[in-house]
Image (cartoon, rainbow, N blue to C red; front, top):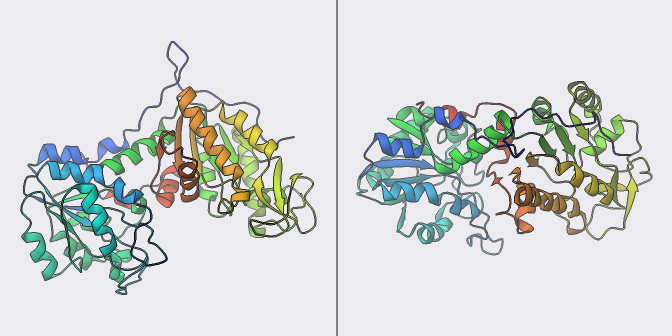
Length: 437
């Protein structure tokens, strides 16, 4: 039998005459200035606007130069083009990898030079680049911008102070423009110089279109969801998801759990888990989470069967077993077919669904079925029932895109950590720093 607590969803949201529940985007973004609001307040023609973006794209391992996936570059286009259409000069600012204060010429922690050709193609204009992000040379380059120009600054993390919200770096960036637009949601949970500190040196700071969309969907899901609301939480470790699970117990009608973390729950329940991943120091916490779910009337659903392997490799010998029948040196690497079927029935009942974390070892094709099938279920729920489906977390996003379903769900979040913290109810420094309206 499926491991679960409580028997039914609760429905608390109003419905219309046809029985359909509506999703209401949160008003959280309404108390912060948006890029459209900035354009209404200020004539941006000829004005410099510093735009914090996320240009962390993967590079080819063969040459450390070729961009292999320009998803994040395409994500900045709506805001950048909006500003350019208003006649503003756009100064793009981003970190790239983790150089930890060192100047690295190439590679995933190096200079931002490889993204220039892609940006020029996407924006339809020349992109000038400087080899620093503050100082006299950069200030001179910013002063020579005229109207509708684009300037790309160098990797902000070439300065150690970036991740420490260094006042000097914040002030240096602040000298380049009078207005700031934050459109890097993936770094909004970090209080860094280029995400938060710089706003103190601007006349006005606004949320870009990407940031605004993220806030509307993620905060909307938490604050004003279409009910029943469900979270599907996966990943290897319980410890990384504890805060969000605890927070979601106060918001969700049901939580489906998958990934390696399920085995810590099973061990807490007294089951044999073989060689499966387990966090021994989290056993009591898992018991506590299950107890809280039962007390709050939240349906907490764990898989009833799993796909086992005799080693942690894609070509390992595999078998399907009930979670009560795991033994020997077998390890669980994916949820089983019975669990997939049960998850499908649960998902059919939900009107708002947040998916964060894979159901198995998604990197290995033979153990990616659970994750891919859940992605398909969410696309079906959106297309056939109008359910609001939100995908957050790298592997969850990869699964949806790999299945060719990126345009079939309501929203794909660009920030894993930021998404989790927002779902936990935390205030994001990169949002808090924006101008209030």
